[in-house]
Amino acid sequence: MMRVLIQNWWLLALRGLFALMFAALAFSLRTLLKAYLVNAIAFVTLVLVCGLLVFASGICTVAAGVRGAGEQERSWWLVVDGGGLAIAGLLVVVVPNLTVNTLGHLAAASAVVIGMSELVLSQTLRRHIPDEWFLVLSGVTSMCFAGYLLLMWGQEAAVIGKWLGIYAAFIGVVTLGLAFRLRALRGSIHKLAATAAR
Image (spheres, one colour):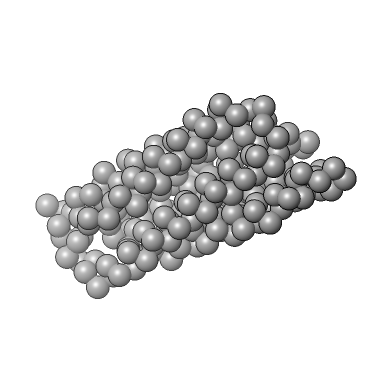
């Protein structure tokens, strides 16, 4: 798993960048979501771009898992993690007349899948590097965010958009931190792989 993550650090960095792009969009459209005449257009724009960015993030993670599939490691957790994101993003784009509640349900479900996958992946990382807290932090945050969404179904689109933006920004920063930490380990990839084999 370490070899897979280190060799595909740039795919994790792309996932982090997509999350930050969505966060920037969510914050920029937040005021429009409160406006009476343009809130529907702003919501549709936010939903479509959200779906595309989430789908792209999922594809990046699935690609990292598939690239490591031949190494007989636990890279299939990356496929599960990315698959959850990609499916949620695809549903957001193709489901007609998506409501705030449906968006909340999809975001909560994908956050649970992502959180569980990242917590399992952190167990693999902790044996090799001291920075597994990146994934632990991301996984716990995803689970907490899912729980929070389940408690706020009645909220308006502006509130949902704000919290989606905060969550995406936090996950984006954490994912980029992990990606660049993995990039720094490229020189010791063989040593880490040998340690993992013991």
